[in-house]
Amino acid sequence: MATHKLFLLPGDGIGPEVMAEVVKVADWLGKEGIASFETETGLVGGAAYDAHGVAISESDMALAMACDAVIFGAVGGPKWDSVPYDARPEAGLLRLRKDLKLFANLRPAICYPALADASSLKREIVEGLDIMIVRELTGGVYFGEPKEIIDLGNGQKRGIDTQVYDTYEIERIGRVAFELARKRGNKVTSSEKRNVMKSGVLWHEVISALHKREYADVQLDHMLADALGMQLVRWPKQFDVIVTDNLFGDMLSDVASMLTGSLGMLPSASLGEADPLTGKRKAMYEPVHGSAPDIAGKGLANPIAMIGSLGMALRYSFGLGEAADMVDAAIAHVLESGMRTADIKGDATSTVSTVEMGDAIVAALGKTKV
Ligand code: NAD
Image (cartoon, rainbow, N blue to C red; front, side):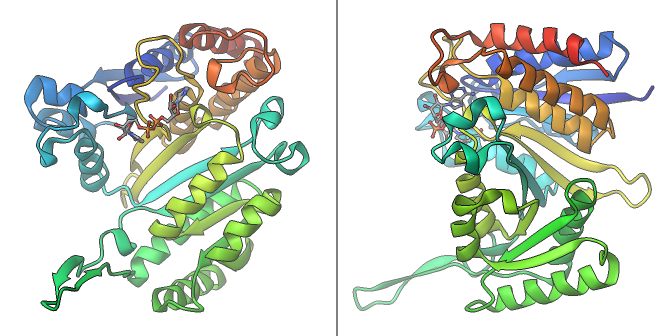
C-alpha cells in the first residue's frame, strides 16, 4: 500500500482543536490498513508568527511543497491584528496557495438529511443537496493588473481592478470541472457574465470548445452568474458541478454554503496542475471556516468540516474513493443518531464537545466499514 505524506498545519484558534480530530481519523484508517499516512506538523498564521516572526517559515514551506497533501486548519485572531502586514496570519495561507499554484478550489455543498432544518431554506429545497462549486482561484479580477487607486488631481480618485483571463486558465479549470462531473452527476453548469464582460465572452467560448472537443459525453449548460445566484436559492438541486471564475465563485460558493446549515460543516479542496509525469497534483485541504476566536479553547468547535476535508484528500489526492465514502457515511451516521455540536444544535436538547464528536465519528467508521 502506498504511504501518503500529509503535512498538517493546524494554525490558530480552533484550528488545532479540529485538527486533533482529523489525526484520530487518519490513525484509525492506518490502523485498519485502509490507508497509510506519514505525517509531519508545522506552524502557520499567528502560531508561526509567535515562533518565527513570519506567517509561515521557509522550512515549513519546503515541507508543504514536498508532501502529497497539506491539511490546513485555520489562521487568525485578534491577538495578531496589529502584526506587520506581510506577516499577518492570512499571508501564510496566501503564500501556500500561490507557491503550490492551487488554481482550482472545490467547495462541495452537501445537505445531510438530518440537518435539513438547519438551513435557512425549506427542507424540500435542500434535503439531499449535493453540488460542487469549482472556483478558479489564481486569476481574474483579484490578481489582474493594473490594480490601483489613482489620484485624478481634481479631488477625485479612481479605483481600478482588472478582470483578465487567458485561454489556458479557463481550459484547465474547465477540465477539472468536466472530470469531476464524470464521477458525479455528469453535468456542468458554466457561469460568467458574457452579456456585459469580454472575459465572460471568452470564458463561454473556451468552455464550449473544450466541451465539444474533449467532454461531449458530459451535459453542459451555461448560466449568467446573476441568474445562477438566483437559481441557487430557488432550486439548488438542479445543479451538479458549477464552474466559474474567481470573483463569481467567491460569492456563489458562500451562497451555496448557507444552504447547508453551518460553517462548521463545510470542507474544501484546492488543487494545482497535474504533474505530466506522475499525474499527481499539489493539493491543500481545509475547512471553509476561520479560526473562530469566539469559541476557541472551549471544546465547542464542530470538527466535521475539518474531517470532511481529510475525506476530500482521500478522494482527490489519493484515489481512495471508498475510504472517502466511509468518512462521509460515518459523518451522516453520527448526525442521524442525533448527536450535535452547538453550532448545529437546532432542536436538540443536548450538545457534545469537539472531542466527543470526533470520537463518535471514529466509532461510526467501524460500523460503516465497507
Ligand atoms: P469564522 O469562520 O472563524 O467564524 C464565524 C462564526 O462561525 C463564529 O461565530 C464561529 O464561532 C463560527 N464557527 C466557525 N467555525 C466553526 C466550527 N467549526 N464550529 C462551530 N462554529 C464555528 O470567521 P470570522 O469570525 O469572520 O473570523 C475569525 C478569524 O478567522 C479572523 O481572524 C479571520 O481573519 C480568520 N479567518 C480565517 C480563515 C482561514 O484560515 N481560512 C477563513 C475565514 C476567516
